[in-house]
Image (cartoon, rainbow, N blue to C red):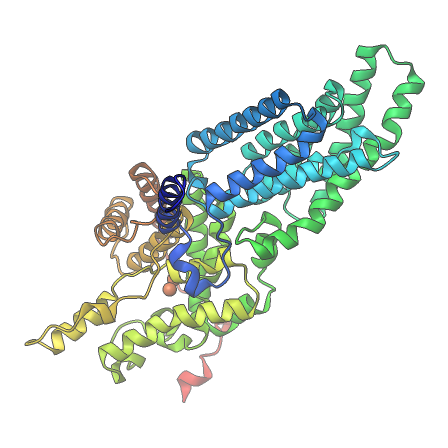
Length: 511
Ligand SMILES: [Fe+2]
Ligand SMILES: [Fe+2]
């Protein structure tokens, strides 16, 4: 006979497993795993429970082992978890289904507690130099500045509790952490992290001085406290992120603005090749990058990621640049020169066009382009239909319609607001080239049509984009495109000048 507790236990486990399964299904990263390689997948409930358990066992020896204290600590941590979950839901909803972001948050919290424990455990380590600011820098750069504030607050409480419920420790570490968070917001190069360290140092010094004023410490006591604590805290808050960020960036598909700027440098070999070997695509890339950056700013998405992602979105065209219209430089009208695709049947042409996605992913991976940027390559086309060649195939096979599936990109569809912008900027820029007399109203109408058709085609089904966002993107694109195609005034011709001062005719024309 089976034990009485087995049946409810089995039931609970089954429910938990099926819940984890459905949650994984909802994860924005899931169906990219095959194409984009390594993914960190730890279900959110496991991360939450794990982080709470680590905090529990770290704090337990400090609070004492009596039953009522154990209960109080468990209750406090349960409350903390509840607070975090609510905060994510209401303030950072983009992270709710993002297992990776939750995992990173839990990891940073645990790392912060370990730093505090280590700092307090090392004999002679200045207590006001607990490097909570280092965690604030990492969270600001990899996740979100508001989340960094929350984590700083929680870690400052933990530091206070672990240091015999010291309010002073809590206060100084909180101010130092806040300084690190604010200073790292504007970090653009690795060297800027040292600047954040400098800000942490002086804020720590001021906070200790303030404490001294409160407690009527003598100057000697204040100096003894801040002499080592301030510079050491600043130093650690720069050195730890400098060491941690590359490791975390390689394990998680998150990039800091520092890496983005490094990857977006046109002196990098891949971008240089684009400039030299596919000038048309390079020009298109610059236009869509500017458009995407502005639209991202309009909806509060990551504009730097958008810009750099666009630099790489068509990198796969480097393999066969001549098959893409923008690189057929001498061809102004269809009659000018036979097109590369004239020799191919529509299904073959669409295969060549589609191959730029796979080639792009391979090229980017071979050049160590971060995953977050790599996503722009497959997602900027999603599962869109290559209409031009599909229509050509329809014209050629009048009796039997060809299957539309073979004229569709393999996807995945956009999973972030940034890649939605990428898809729309790419299509809008391409379509606007064929517009005669591109006035603002005509451009607005064109972009609106493109957004509508992508929306109806289900391209945004997996992206956290709202209708209000789409409206802002449309307006932003219409503005950018009308700036590109602004009406130029016609310059009046000067009266005929002395012919002897003209340039000699082109040699090639004389032949
Ligand atoms: Fe493309
Ligand atoms: Fe493109």
